[in-house]
Image 1 (spheres, rainbow, N blue to C red):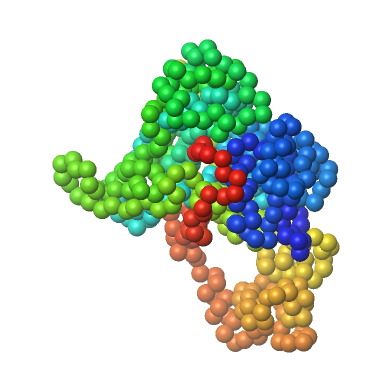
Image 2 (cartoon, rainbow, N blue to C red):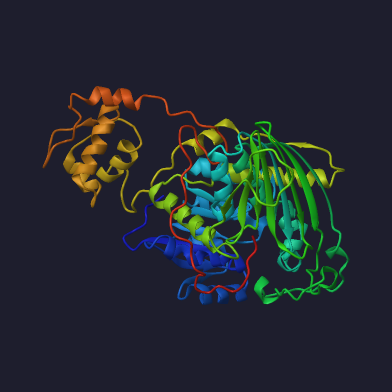
Length: 516
């Protein structure tokens, strides 16, 4: 893989449906990145790409994109059933990949994508943007402060009031393309259940039915259209909807039970014909419970932590920050996290392992739902895959730098721990723009830990490798990290990082409400 050139990180968008608008955040999230190409298999999609992204190169499929070259990263927004094949092709071509959730529609495909990322070492990121939403950050903060004690149960009710327009008038309604709305829709919430409970589902049970939309006979193809073209709050009541997808065979009511690996019990319920559109979490711990009322700005996270009869007010309440509607703020933070991972190797709140576990729970719950609600056990990932994604990400090398060059040697050996020998002059050449103080500080720490051997001075001190204080620094660096609960979103010894940056205003080209 190559680091972006002086012109910046070159990004492609694959699939230009309504979700492709997340790519409008690229330049805001990271000013040295830009969308330079787009892909869509339909002519209307290629026209839409030019409307959204301006003068970009447009291709009819991802094979043409890869043949043209010049792409550092790709944002994959195609229908769910295509994610795995395209993502694997991109990873094997050395292109960093942002996959819109869900990662895949089957557990086998999800594992295939992770295996490609492990084999190639190319960055993989899955767009579980809901982790960055104000409501989830508020709930996670309550749990991390210990206000409700140890989490023991999580209940989620999802009122998908816009479900008829969002999921039953295009490919989402077709089981062969979506698998189940316990993936396409619930993958956000399954992931957040795992995140809040610090564990992953190991056994699931599903139940559900197609209650309303399967009986509507007014159906049509919507070639060249996307969801904003037909969305309206006037499309009510649900049974009066028109223009459904020709194939409607996914459930419009789904429920699942989850038993997590740490003993937490959880449930999730979704209904696609409610009048209101939001989700409600209840998290119960050993010393209290929390619940959100509303899931965007204007809502509140309530905490009850003493015994009493029922009351509307919480014993403590925390306002939900962010946008009033939609998820533009979470989209911006998600895109920034992806680009920072690709360029700088910054650790992420969202992990491919967590995305796989959401697919596993949702897909197997759908199997259970369609098999008389028989329980399904979730198989674990191979240890070498877990080990790969547990390691700190690596920054990408600059293009045109051959293996063994000074810069390549510094990045791949010094910064990643293998022994080598170099001078301050080597470091100045390899790391232009980095001050001598930072270089000496880093060199001193690495030398003290025994990772590098400084060479003779050339144009400046070689660092502090001979400093008599080095042994004490080495001893300090050898101390084990502070213990921390393990689970999704928290690596051992490291507190989860908080998203950066202010909430975003609606980006250029916003076309109405979005699915979340």
